[in-house]
Image (tube, rainbow, N blue to C red):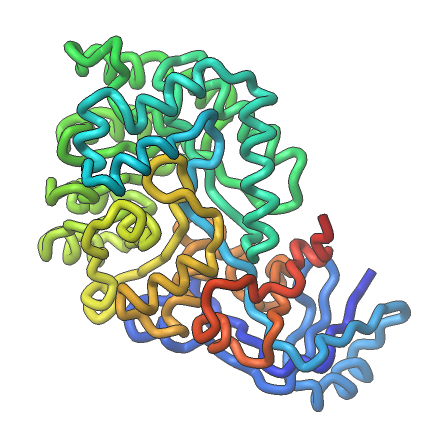
Amino acid sequence: MINILTNISSLVTINANGKLFKAGKDMQDIQEIKNAAMVFDTNIIWVGKESELEQYLIDNPIKEYKTISADNKCIIPGFVDSHTHIVFAGSRSNEFAKRLRGATYKEIADEGGGIQTTVKATRNASIDDLFQNGKTFAISAIKYGTTALEIKSGYSLNLDGEIKQLEAIKKLKENLPLSISSTFMGAHDIPIEFRDNKDKYIDLICDEMLPLIKEKQLAEFCDVFVDEGYFTVNDGDKIFKKASELGFKLKLHADELANTEAASLAARWDAVSADHLLNVSENGIQNMIKSGTVFTLLPGTAYFIRLPYAPARKIIDKGGILAIASDCNPGSCYTENMQLILSLAVINMNMTAEEALTAATLNGAYALRKSDEFGSIEVGKKANFLILDSSNYADLFYHFGINHVKETWISGVQFDK
């Protein structure tokens, strides 16, 4: 069925005029159309001013269609959350309470907690347990405006468990309307049984995990946590070499806890994105800009574990491609609400509202290499959009802490669960 959406107060298209991303100062240009209309089925067919709609229908007769009024509300592209860890088991609320009493994230990890706490629970969970938990997060995320997301493994750290997580992600893809990208992250931490022989675990990732996951076609991306206390740049080189040979696209958790020059590693391998980057160096920034690697910033994590924020303003002013994502996970950022992430980006990372919208839509899609399919409201792309409860997109930032999404539409269908 073709739908005609009218009475749109403000249509924020994030139209990139044929490009797949917006970088630097171009992130400010959100291509807003006032008093707009839109024609769509599963994809966008036409957008423009409502005053132009009658002539469009004369030139392009449509036999059967449904007219919907936006009731003078604002429409924006659906959010693309390009970094999440929502397939897991267990809870780390007790560890969160410890952090509130002064323990650091690293101290908890050194005591055998942190990621290892979730590993224990996830190894004991079934595929259906992991599917159901991930489904709860995904449906909630849709209600807050997420129409596409990425999900990582990395909470099992053994062959059978990582496969189990990726099978659960595959099941989510098959049962939910939103677009889901899957990432293998066996190099999320070093499992306890390999703590005295990290190289042997890296060999397991390269020689057994990556080939089997590729054979089963369970992941598009390979991600590595290169940071102080986790994997080194040399470790990342070895894993990326194997992953690249097998045809995985590359991502990197980089320079979150310290500057390890992981950002330059990502640039050297032409990684799709390097994420976190709280401690990224000037050299790392320049190298990522040269390589075209996306800077995926996760302000919710800095907020949740009380760390300084990544230098978003510097990255944008130097011309970087910047995305923002939730990093929804049980230990360092327990939220699936992208509206909260947008708020943190503008208040604590000095981004403008327009830059944050671009980062959470088109550039998020580019960080998944899917911006040719969605991330902006452009003819030919999927009809993934949000009807807000306001006539002005600025209200999304101004009135914070509430859900501004009145309706979430994915591939031309309103989500109503």
